[in-house]
Picture (cartoon, rainbow, N blue to C red):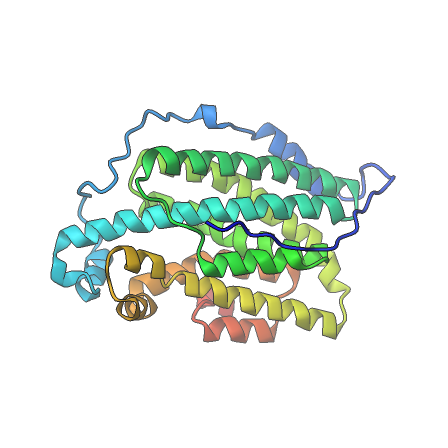
Length: 315
């Protein structure tokens, strides 16, 4: 894959008052120290029978298969799809975690307040561990990992190109990290081997801290923004949501399974199970946007138009 090189001009910020200005943020750093784990805590001898037959899918899954472009090929094709979906998801987790690693380092450099810098530093260490673990899982357990999707690559490039730390944090902590956290927590129902389910459970615990840090750090910033600056952040949210929604049309997976791109995208767009999955993972983004004060009428309407708001977001 071609490396992503993002030119950016940023000014590092150092504060000479140490601690006490944000006790809730400092608490996240302390929590990270207590909850630390490593790749060595995992049982890497656990077999991952990639591609082998799976237990019967749920009724909703079987209904999705019957309506899918794979139906005419028989149940083995649906098994192949379910494994490929897992491989694609974990591949995008890895690429997203590398983006989060660089973004966290950027936020560490720019965010005001030493308590916030400590929390950002703990996130850098977390993201490095996540990159290490997901890369090992893909190298050892997945026959053919996927490259980064064009949409995720574009989003990472956009948020890293901006010199404002809050924009970087908004794109990664509130959009990408919240999406990933939701997907990690759903892995128990969507992934097929105990090793990746254990990995995602541990990573989800870290990501919950990261999203909380983003909310706590960004809320006072956005409360103080004028209307023009707020509109810029709203635009980023809507553009990011559109990119991430397009990612879940699974173009790379359909290509690997030799399904015509238009047929696969149409199915992913319209299938009730896949629509519910998108809404479920975006629910964490909606909650984080509400927490930072960016679930404005404009954002709410835009997300609803993309089919991503869900019942909770409309409340």
